[in-house]
Length: 507
Picture 1 (cartoon, rainbow, N blue to C red):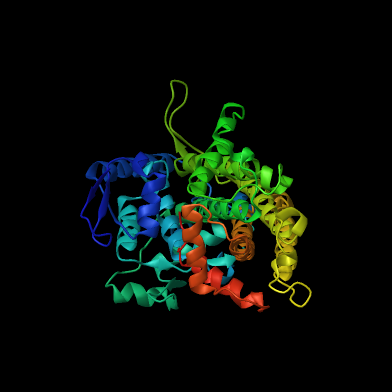
Picture 2 (tube, rainbow, N blue to C red):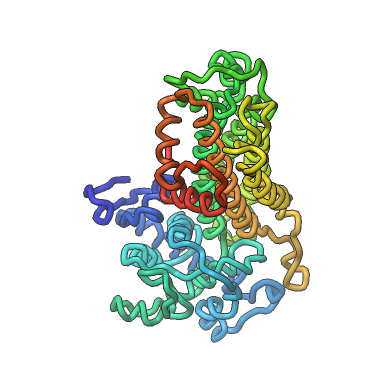
């Protein structure tokens, strides 16, 4: 793999091998709009795969979705006219999704991950289709993929919305996020609608490109939240004047868990230069288990990423073309590669770990209201009794805490069946991932509630916190001025959330 150019809009990645599509490659192309080109050797490999596929079909090999119908209609053998029509028609009747679109990066990643399957040469598609995908990535043709209604095994509904745009059906995202007609956008680019031949419609429809694209996006969101949570935990420890025993670097010798060790490493720099001394010998459990709770999320995200990366190069379309062996010739096999239970399970794991981490923040916020715990005025009120202080921030955070717990329940266990029982185990991976994104959004608001209280508590101590914590406090105060009496905290939390969303606190 090679890169050229320095400006993000001009850079290009050239793939020499299918295996060059890595996590970083997907992120560069999907999120940074880096352009893509393919080596001639890769295109030749795809051409050879197409020739092998046609040899099998011409020899009379049955092929699901090429010589037969789909789903429950797999037993319907198609005549020659139907075979010719199916390649395009397969992209017409399955676009059943509704709701707002998935993000532009997810749509672009879907195109690239689907391309990865094509470049394996096990799909039987032509180089023309491969080149069409690359060209649409490079001219910023972004399919409109609705975010709701993805209850099928694999990503058939999402992929229909995505790839019917190639033939001039459906919608795409405009430059400003508006919904545009796909046919008009192709014409505006001077591009003729693609004309799929046998197998290509099915290849565009099947597999799990959108699922993996959503998984990458969810991981990026959750990983960013974890960095914010580490920062907030450090500020909260300073606010509580909590002992630092639980984050002492020497604990790394007695806790052999990578995530815990990484959290301890990340927390240490925040306390450099601090003049705050512990208020009590031992803080509440919600402070002492910060490395354990956040470390578990760190490890869950690491495993999640590992399984996504494996999935990028796991062939997921159905059927798959396999090579000859000493005992058998090349063949087309129907299998279940479109169901990536590893990614599903790890997404559920992340959902649980994320809920624990967010609830922990809400519990710390509750402790900050307690003068016995903090040694400060009750509820951090400027005028105790007359003022409520910040107690309602914790009460509001309880709402989010409860919702987080509900969303942590394993959604993938709600699987059902379709197609008269032919498709009797649904993955639900896109809904699983979308609900993790909801959790991240709620957990970010919990962080804002806690940060607001932390800054107030540190100011009441009138002692200098660590240098990095001082910087964070200054950033908070750019949006939320200090108050010497009660003020409705809702607008303050929203102002703080705007700072967070703008990346002001990214570490």
